[in-house]
Image 1: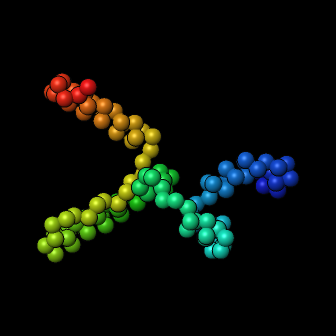
Image 2: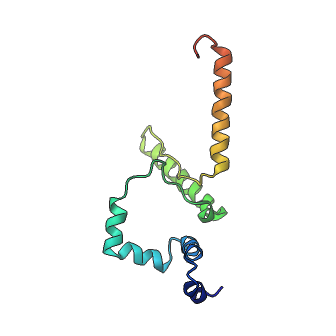
Image 3: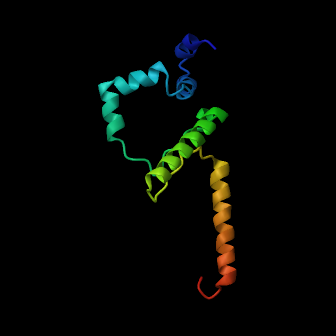
Length: 122
């Protein structure tokens, strides 16, 4: 691809899609986070409704293994210190497949509750 041609041909959507695919460690993202105007926009934006989770493209066997290893070390540390509450595991990527599986699981649970307690639900 010729980015100069895309620029001359005013293919803004294609350029923006390509920019959105840059990794978090790109020079562009570093420049955005070090720009005073962009920093103000990033700080002032509202908190997302969903909790943070890494993207699927950033998740690999190595990151999954490291995540489990670090969590096991944290749990071991908690057990050795005598604390009662275990730390939560590191978030994993959440995809449409995960959300649909969760929704269907909730629906099955509600079906079972409806069967067991027909008088309690409308």
